[in-house]
Length: 231
Image (cartoon, rainbow, N blue to C red; front, top):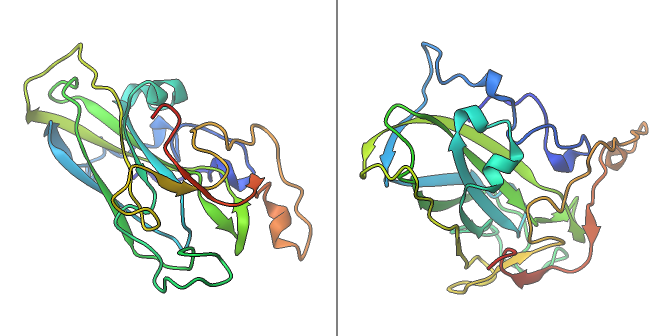
């Protein structure tokens, strides 16, 4: 991933950009870069820590790296939506004060996707990962929070035949800890990227009040089950 220069949309600092740092901060062309190379049509496994929070969706999108500062470019090139708790769950799945299946746990969640076939050999591309619709903010099972996002840059080489003008429609793969073998995910507040955004609003920190450092929670209410908007 890129080195982070700002926080998330959900941290009460507004949404600075479509990645956790601007394109200028990419290390892909530096001599010591560890950026990977993948082929068109190659299946990639993306992993993330559950981070002690349940629920929500993950959106995966990919664009030419030159477009990686542009939210609209990513939104127009979505590959896949999956449940945030894909292949993971709480460490101790008890019905505790956080609600059924909402307990802590920092296990590895993961999902797979295929590299689109419309990228040329040698092209630098950026994968965007967004988590939205998560819940249990500071232990409150009725609190949903804004989105978190990250990006990774890599190169394309080989693989399937180039299809310059073809863009496959995005897909949704449901099923999480609370809804195994299903076509839905558990989520809080929002099932659409862009809803949980604070714009240019800033928090008003107060000494001794940790929660005042953020604009969260984005919304209050029980979790629900469903699919992302459009599915």
